[in-house]
Each structure stands twice: as C-alpha cells, then as structure tokens.
Length: 480
Image 1 (cartoon, rainbow, N blue to C red):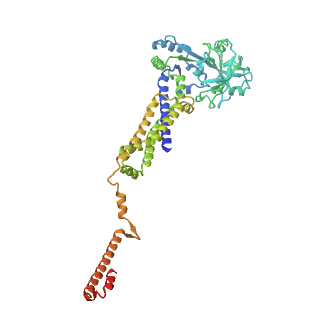
Image 2: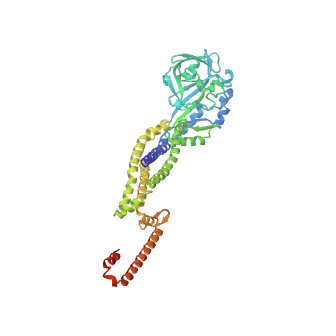
C-alpha cells in the first residue's frame, strides 16, 4: 500500500507540475506575442511627482493633442496602415449643488486645485482598460453610450455614491474649475468599482481630494463637447488633459512604436508604456509563482519518490535469503526468482502510476485554475514525458529487485546448519567435551570386562580335574 501511494503521489505531482510549466511557458510565449497592446505616452514616476495638484502651472507640462498627432503619424513608419486610437480627456471639477467629494489628507482650496473631483470623458470602451486611475467594472446600472449625444449620463464610484446618497437615476452637480458661476448637472447611469489596485497617491493615500480615484466621474464624449470643456484656448485648471492610447496589433508593433517614439525625442519626463500589457503580466504573477514552486516540487518528487520506493523495495527483500536458498535447493532458477521479485515490485507501483497519472491529468486544469486565480493549466502532451520518467524509475526498481536473486551467494548455503551442529551445548558444556567423557567411560568398562574374562579363564584351567564334578556350576559361572 505504501508503494502504491508513493507511486501515485509522485506521478500526480509531476503531471500537474508539467502542466503548470507548460501553461506558464505558453502564457509568456505564444499567448503574450498574440496580445493586442495599447501604447500610451505618460509621465514617468519622477515626473508625476513634479506635477503638483495645487499648482495650476503644472498644466503646461501636459502633452497637447497636436503632439500626440505627431506620434500618430509615425505609426506608418512601423507598418500600421490604419491607425486606431483610444482617447480620454479630463478636468478637475468643483463641488456644487450639495455634492460632496471624499476628502484628501491635505486638501487645499478649489482655487488652488481647480476642484475636488475629476471629470473624465471616455471616447470608447478601450479607454477604460488604459484609464489613468485603473480599470473598472459596473456594479450597478448601465455602461456609457459613447455614440450618444447625451451630455448628462455619468458613472460614479460606490464610495462617491454612498457619500452623496446617490442611486442609479439620481442627479448631482459639479462646478467649472475656473468659473464659479458655471455648474453642470449629471445623471447617474451606473455605479462602478475598480478592478485594478490604486496607483500610488490615488487611493486612500491621496493628498488632495481630486487625486482620490473614488472622486472620479466618467462620462461620454458629449459631456465635454456640448459643455465646451475641451477648448484649446483654455488656461489654468480649465486646460484639458488628453490621454491617447495607440492601438497596436502585436507585441512586436509595440516594441517598434516605443523605439520610434524615442527616435522622435519624447518630451523630458515622459515614457512609452502599455497598461494592457502590464495588466496581462500582473495576471500571470500567480502562475509564475506556482510554476516556480512546482519546478522545485517536481525535482523533489522524482528524487524523493525514487528513494522512498527504493527503500520500500529493499525492505521487502531484506530477509529473503533463506527463502532464495531453499528455492534454489529444490530447483528454482535464479531467473525465475528474479522475475518473482520484479513482479512483487511492479504489482503495487504500476496501478499507483495509473491512478496518479489519470488523477493528475484530470485535476490539472481545475486545480491550476484555483491556484492561479482563473488561469487554466490543462494537461498537455508534455505530461507524457513526465509519466515516462516515472515509469523509468519503477522499471529501474524492478530490475534492482530482479538482481536480488542473481547476486545471492550459494557457496554458503549450509553455513547455518554446520554452525548449529558445532554449537550444541547442554548445561554450559560443549558437545565435544561430552563426547570425550563418554568415550573414556566406554574404554574403562571394556577394560574391566576384559580383566574379568581373563580371571575366569585361569580358574577354569586350575579346576580342570574337578570339571566333571562341577561342570554344571562352572557352566553357570561362565554364562554369568
């Protein structure tokens, strides 16, 4: 039972580990290359720290729409014939009409910051996947209609909705960042929840209220166009901030775009990145960890399983010498005994390999999915090689068991019997001593018998004359 269990656990682990390793290799290879990344040009971490949310002069460091257009024209140099883009525009907005934002840790007046909330205008659904504040999904309500001319429909966060007692269909107001007299009315079309971790400084650690991503309000393109918020003549906090995503057809195009942008001299403090590729790599982190662990486990299972099975085989053949010698005395050949021992090894281990192999193949996908948060790790053809390695280990053990009878020494087959005969004792005395004593006693008895016989012969000669008178008596003595 132990051999069956160890064999099953060994092959189960190596089959599952091989499946995980194969899935990890495919995810970082073929699947990664097939991604359709969206490239963005955004401030580096160092530059982001210099964009002060309470200093309106920071807007001068924004990339203008014309600058983005220059990089868009460069797409033709890398073979993109029909470039596609994802655009979003943002502005800070003031609290108005009783609307309250979630406070920051060190808030400043709206005059310095432009407002306590941020209004984002998204031009398509891909803009959500590259959103500055992170990807999000709807918790309630409906998604935005990007083709609609409705300038009032908007999405708010769960925290913002709780703060202002908003529900789907409720209305709220926001104020212009530079003109206190202008307000805009929005209607809650949906309530969202972020699926990405909060960027540093944009979560509960936000210094200013407008930097807290839960204060972000998302609307369609009409919210900016109809309200004339995307004007190029604006100044200060009324200056819109554009964020353009370049849709590419593969990782190779993304790499080419990054090289092209560097050749065109990116503005200081800006870099090319891809939020979609970063998110994809983040999703693979649990798989990377599992693959790393299972790589070590597989080596341990091969080595440890083989050693444990070898010990179990050795334990089973440990005290079989007498059995082997007796079988050979009655005519059983070494080959027949070796085959018997090999079968004793194969009979528990082969069923164990079958049970563990089938279980590992069937459990690889659901087990891997549960350990990697949804990434499937199905058994593949590479798992057969792992199975063959386990079969090879079991075959080697069978050969070792076969050789047990071959190397048994028959020249000492009677050693145990001879030793026992020489060592027979009684009351602490050896058998040789007892035999010597017995021989001495027997010798003395024979001497006495011979003396008595000689004496009787002399008496018989001396009394020869009286033989006739005492014949009966002499005969009796002789017989006695």
